[in-house]
Image (cartoon, rainbow, N blue to C red; front, side, top):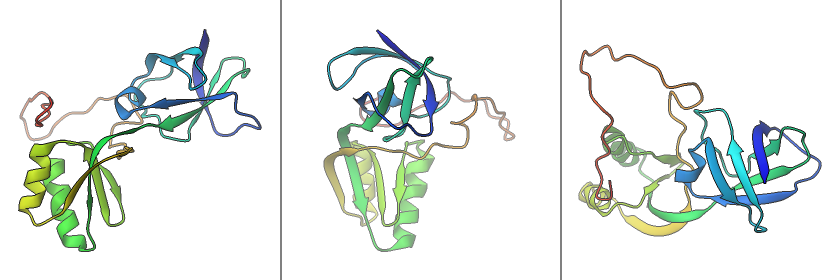
Length: 163
């Protein structure tokens, strides 16, 4: 089995690709099937979301694998009004929803409860299949360790219909 242990910036040749949804791209230890059917294992440093287009290699550099973001069930909001889009991002952020943010667009893993909340704000929400590339977040590239200054100890709770 190919064991991918490191991220690389560039390569003259790519051996294969692996298509993963966002839930798989969050994991640093994972057994995967490459797009050509071969088995591989991810043994990467923790705390980094794999992005579509990223390159992974084994320790010797014999194998270079390109990560592809798989299309998955998402909700997409497109809006030309920056204030309305900012309001939507605020309400989704208050619910700790992983969010892809692009000019005129917000995208999150499909959730009909959140869809209805945004429709209530006057936005149009489209359920579709698309690659999902959420914002990395403040603590994603480093080990997660922080303290809250507000004095409230609380567990992370995902408020969605499919939690």
